[in-house]
Amino acid sequence: MDPQHISETCREIKDKLSAYLDGELESALCAEIEQHLLGCDDCRVMVDTLNKTITLYRNYGQSQVPPEVHERLTRVLKLEQLKAKNNSADPSAHS
Amino acid sequence: MTQDPSRDEDLVLQAQLGDEAAFAELVRRHEHRVYTLALGMLHNPADAEDILQETFISALRGLKNFRGDASFATWLYRIAYNATLMKLRKASPTLSLDETIEGDENDLPRELTDWSHDPIDAALHAETRAVMDAAIAALPAAARAVFIMRDVDGLSTEETAAALGISIEAVKVRLHRARLALREQLTPYFSTRRREQKEVT
Image (cartoon, rainbow over all chains, first blue to last red; front, top):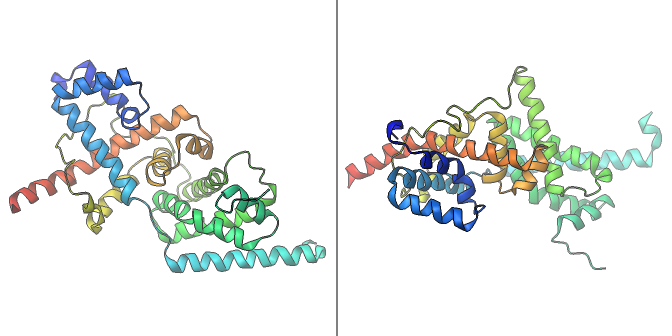
């Protein structure tokens, strides 16, 4: 994007893009942005690639807990629950 | 009154009465999100596993005092985030959580190739995934946490604000900066891919 050819409108739109993509803007403002996008290739590319970035992470960003990690977590929690039971059955265990 | 077993609130009530299966179900529901947050923040599977265990042990110990002022998910995330911060600070005592993202809101995008038509299943490739992970790792910690909670784990703006103890406006500002920075980071990779795909065809 050539700074010499950037309009104030482009700057303002860039600041509102997340709100625009998240559907948080009023319809009049959305219409204004969409009108600008029709005539500004740079802003259109910006919107499309920003939207693609968000979609990529939404669809593929989450990490699944590996089965062995889940197993270890389950074991640790069972031990913790057992300790809590023993402590409540034997109050002197705290002292 | 019949309790709906599909609601976290009901599972919490049952777990508070000592129902271990109810707590196990809460773990099953939320472990992936907690693990995603920890791994995304720390980039180390062993550290992420530590955080996962610490978070659920703390939740188990604190469950009897949980009054439901926030949702269970928000409460859990707050525990996980605080544990993650402690680990980050231990590794780097001078860590600044909110250093400015390179290229703040006054800067213009530097990369404007249109790669938005790249096939979406591209993200399944290990190479692409590594580029996405590296881009997240380059974000300042505070922006990274907001982005992971909102756009990866799918929490609402309100839940994210409550989990991080910041305002809704701060969540929105950090999320926007994080998204812009990630877009900049991903663009060179996808632009190159696009050129290579064109050459092949």
